[in-house]
Amino acid sequence: MMVRVILQNLTWQEVDALSREIVVVIPTGAVEQHGTHLPLVTDSLIAGRIAEEAEKRHSKDVLLTPCLWLGASAHHLGYSGTLSADFPTYQGAIKSVIESLVPHGFRKFVVVNGHGGNIDPIGVALRELKHTREELLLCNFCYFLQIQEQLAAILDGPDKGMHHADEAEASLVLHLSPQLVKKDKLRDDGLKPPVAGMVHNFKELSEEGSIGYASLATAEKGIRIFEAAVSALETTILALASGYRLTAYPAK
Image 1: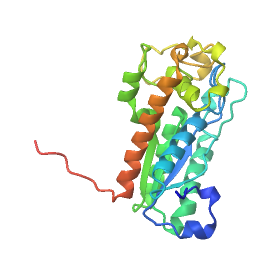
Image 2 (image 1 turned 90 degrees about the vertical axis):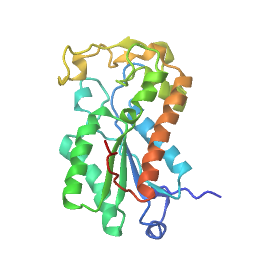
Image 3 (image 1 turned 45 degrees about the vertical axis):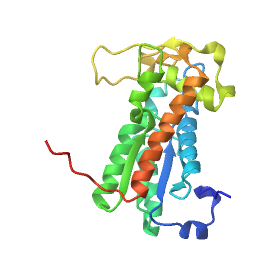
Image 4 (image 1 turned 180 degrees about the horizontal axis):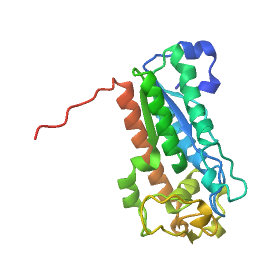
């Protein structure tokens, strides 16, 4: 029988007995508004399920932590129900999980992120850790950035990336937890800034809290996106578990 390696279900002795070559996978998302059609837990739900599936397929290589559900979501606070940590608090949570395990010999960590607002603070937190602990292997794995080519092939709408409560995210939730989707409220929404790099709160960009073509979402697309994300995470996990090595650029 397969033994699942889920941190909160183990005793301290079972954790202590694990190989220190195991990869600690830390899912993180948010509890924030996702338009009128998706639940507040969307980002945490997706990141958590991707991480759980990877652990299920590679239990001997993965130690899965609970999902850090409180994200850096201040730009969504204009909509009711959104919960947000400030940057130092969120970065501290990421660092605290890792720093709790490092003294016991764990050194390989993958943060599986499902929320765009977390990308920068996770990156800063991991860079700070790496600065003081060079022996650590630290990966900032934002699932939708890892599968951009697959998304472009799967999505039908004119925008081939992932935004917010859009065709891609709604498809994922239709696959993972269809009972949480308000199907009668799926709608297209959102404005695009005229230049890249602008910083906006979500109330400036969206009427009802979403950006993209949610009306095109289907569970079948969600299955394909989910499998692409899990596969990308599997590749990352196996690279760290099998003896991570840098390689030279090919000769000219």
